[in-house]
Length: 180
Image (tube, rainbow, N blue to C red; front, side):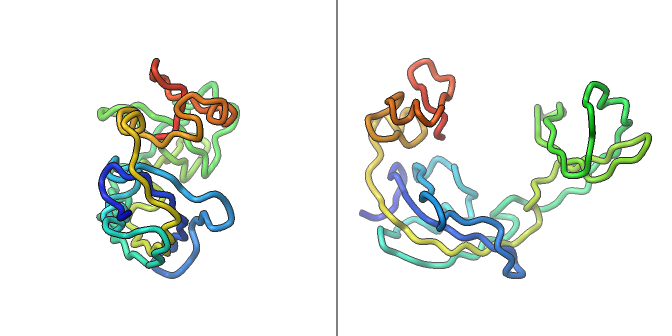
């Protein structure tokens, strides 16, 4: 079966930056599973999977624009340290959720002084061109229930003991899994 929308894809990947530095890999663990077409992956990778099938091994170059986007200097802000009262220690690399005009977003602390904290709302891979080595392990048609819930179900279906053992809960009253 070829990868198309509403197919469940099981794949291994290795992602590197444009200088060839490894960023992440699934090859030493379980393959990544998702429903094609749900935009679970960055568009530059997901779009290149269409038409591939189990056993295919290939590389995909993804531009920053089709990956995690370009960096935006406006997402880097210096704010008073007093905004962090109640947090025991604020340190470089710390990730926090911040309220913005567009809703909550993750920010990373990039500098701390006695009076200010500089946070960056860009994704850590924003502005980075990526290279993926991909191996398609399996492809199957997603079930109607998986399509309705927007995620892959484990053996036994949504809310099965196997999924419950993974401590997954998405909050949907008809589903007890967080696999999206």
